[in-house]
Length: 496
Image 1 (cartoon, rainbow, N blue to C red):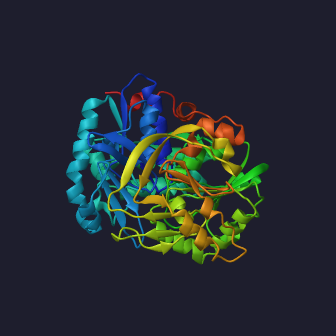
Image 2 (tube, rainbow, N blue to C red):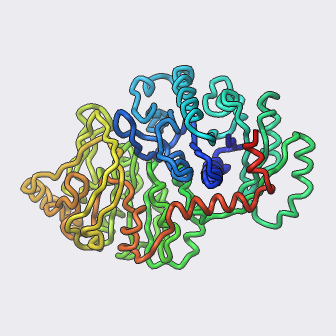
Image 3 (tube, one colour):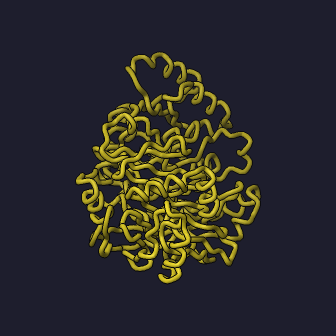
């Protein structure tokens, strides 16, 4: 089991690397995280149809060379507005658990967690478990179902990872160890220093002192590696390196409060000539050339993110970029925002007036669409013409259906708009049946399917660049871990 001193310490990275390293030793390996809180989710197959799991466990399964399974992340919490989270249990939304107070859920969820973990242990040689946040949150220990309770149940051999780049790493390690009950301290087999910069000799004598204090050795010191290629757990990353690179194209992704599925932009980080930036407020929006992109990503709560976007002044920026012919891409919730309006007869998300850049309307439904899909573009024109006839494998996760507005009605509405508003809505057309729409001049594209910018054929068409395969990424993680671990430790960790 991989535990961390904090969120963002590197648990997901290390778990993925371990999955690939042990799979390369010929073992049948499965990842597991009892409860994940993230709006980055992937679609997997279940006996009852498609379901959702956290993206981190999806990639960990691929690293292990096995099919992703809802049991690998039995509980997924997807944050929404006003401190509320949608509860996904074994891949399916549970309305009852979503409405239940947080403190009452734990005992309801625990049997599902243990059943999933037991099944994975029975079917595999090795299960690599990932914790969440820190195991030493003493205010949460009594209701814990993802860290120490799982470790005790499985009697897991635990690693504790910390981000040394933040400073205070040895205090984090010692403080976490000291706050654990003695029986849980005994489960710790090693400390891991992550994101180290400099000469390893400078660490001496801290690891030796820590060993004397705790009895736990420091078993790996992993260097700071920005471009390892694995999507971050929450999709966000330090983009300072991006701004320092020469770039011919800037891709600006608007980061509204309930944004989701940001991991699908990972591949853009490592394409030569592309600068990927997150824009969290209008003052961060760079000056865009007509060839630069503005992207509206997925959203867990479209109407509130749309309201935020309009209040922050991004609506004007989007219209201005559209007017100069600049490419605009809306994915899932971003697509819904690009339309005329959001209709919510069932009280799912909220009614709202859209940005009016596409002549479409979205009506939210009580049923959630969750599925994998193979799609192919039809005739795509203008700024996105390189996508014409291309196919890719993607996935849908959305609560709502989008349709073209009656062309006559859209034409009537368009003449009522201010003359400086770019408006080709009357010519909006479908480019994938029921999944994607494009405006008349071809610079505004909205689609429901996630995964467009992960497809090698699409990236090659758009940027003329090949990207690393996921297998290359996973092997690089495993190789890095092996190089920077105490020799023989990884084998010893699973020895009987």
